[in-house]
Length: 498
Image (cartoon, rainbow, N blue to C red; front, side, top):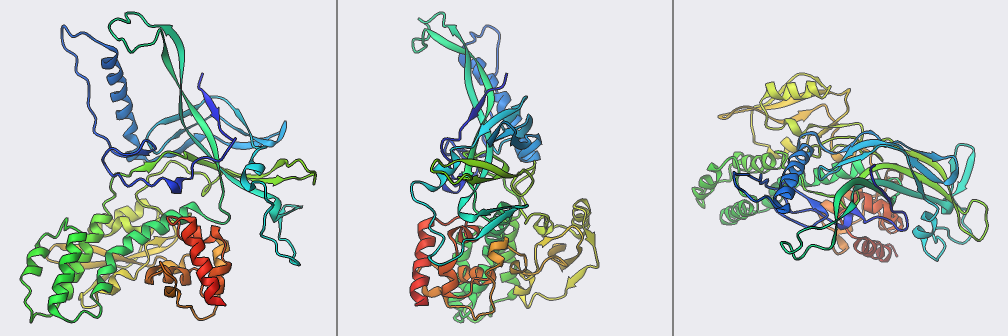
């Protein structure tokens, strides 16, 4: 029987606290990347030991885990979350099969119950919520015909992860051959699951966060255009290009190194050279490298809303109000290569493909392919990166095709959502939109051009709006930043606002 471990005494590890940047090399225990595989070999007359048999088991597991790069990870089937009729503070997780980001199989063959009665105490600590100001009416959240004060609503996200438990203890024989062995050793390993929870960030969509982080990295390839603005001295231009190559080693267009070296002080900067440099960076980013992921939290299953202290008594209790076990709070089986806002498609996967292959990819994605648009010149290099890269399934997509000595290649798409700012972020961020003139957020230490633009695009345009924005809202915009940095921004904005 599979083993189950329920961990609800405290929240699980925050996935934002463990960043996997290890790529394809060994890294921290909570991270999983692409590892080399060594197969044991047996020969006539070999003395088999426990190390040899363990190596055979490890090789088999490592081979099976590779399917996470081919098929992705997430819930394959089952693992439905429903309320527990016998415990108003509990939920029941049904049997199911999922694949962790490390490629481990998560299998449960029967229902198991999860008691969330301790969630309310763990989330707020000894002090009551301080969101309500004196003389201000408290916000009420309606669950059908049941109004609940915002201060009494608890939101958590459930995760399921791989867990092993040793079983079947046996007496170890031949202890003289392996002195480190104990008198009693376990002969089996039960492969089970562990369930944990994290406090949910209200109105933050994890799919939107992943797409935003992907788009930020994609846009970094166009930073060369900004670096070259205002640089008129040919020597400085050449130095800027060389520094760019040092930070972004050429992967496809190696001829650019020679081209830069041949530039003289009297030569004007060819716009084609800038295009190829940025395109080389883009192609390297869009190749969909084998992902490294953090397995500390697990596979997202559902978001749960609870009512804290529903009877108004002194003993804080929790009643389950609602369970949402659908995306974006649940991760179905999918790959990590092309994140997109929920319900949309990432079109980065057709960039630099031939038009014929790009059309096939779009058709497989269920998109309509419209009329092609060709570029006759590369004089305005920056315009090639103005197109949106996220589309709705019903959008009609036109390919922007460039003809060069390398043949016809797709350099952009038209018909998708326009600039990233046009894609609506979560509701709470959208509610902050204003027609006020944007403030100069760069006055705040740590905020540059891109960060200021992202704040403005999300609707945060004044210092007062930044100061009043909730920490959850800012975490949704900048998931990689720590709370103390965001709080420093809020404090500085409050000072600027007077």
